[in-house]
Image (cartoon, rainbow, N blue to C red; front, top):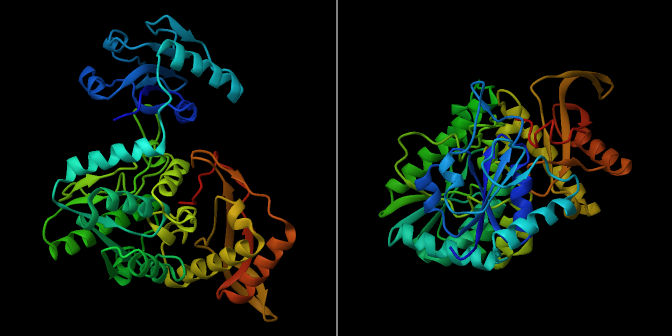
Length: 435
């Protein structure tokens, strides 16, 4: 690894990612690790220049106040502690400054003056490192990649093609939970234009049967994640030399799936949904990138902007936007209403302004009037948010004429719908997705 690194030890703080991003914004690579990282594990991390011990309100486990391993203070690295009164180091801060500029000034002094780190964190170096690591990990074997066509899987594909070329086998699984015409677009772009080694699998009926009568969001995610792996195992069985599974796991996936001092926000299908008897070794080259860094990586790799800035889409697809137990009727309502939203946002330029926008359809009905008669049908909920790293999100304020047109189209064109709502909830307290 060519980049100098600052380690952030999570001692119960809620701003670990904010600090990690601030360090990276200064041109120095950073990683978040558990508070009790072992001396051996710490010594294996490359190019450490300093450690930030980040305390906070959650620094209790089973009612007992926690601390880092004492050996951390004696490991020979400069150490700065934040909101951790028992820290055995000279560089202590009771709290962080309030403004981003003040925080960066504090970090600058510690990173560049105390730690003597070099600002060498950039995508070119990152890609070179990952290409080298992937070649070393994979050797002459083949890698199987779930290519949804979304940003993460597309960037992984480009990175792995750069590293191992034709050893990469891309599999696109249509699980019946895709957006409108999405599978057709994936085939057109990746197989016809980019000449990827692409296998297409239509497993829609198989997935929907597995999800029948399943309403719990966590259970749905785990079923979808596990079934994905099963499909890949079957496809791998038809091929020779497949020993690795590539995934587009990114840093917010890891953080949100929980640590010792943080509650699980939600399980990600590529973090918590993998079966214990997984037959592949994992290749996850984007593991420590935030979403905006993934896009920058894609641009550096030469992917088209339209692909790199494509709408984010969750691994479980429309399965987590068809709330509760999935029905084909509501699934189609989500798909059609989402397509209308995409079209209207593109017409008004909001597709370039808004980070993520989509519709959800809950599993309940309301009374309405359609065709001069009483109706009892589903609502469609529109969500449009802006974010940098998916850890926090704000609501886009859409002009009324645009919302009215979208509402009018959904009510007229989407069957089984008689109401449209707009979600005004930021993250936190809400998450980006509803499930």
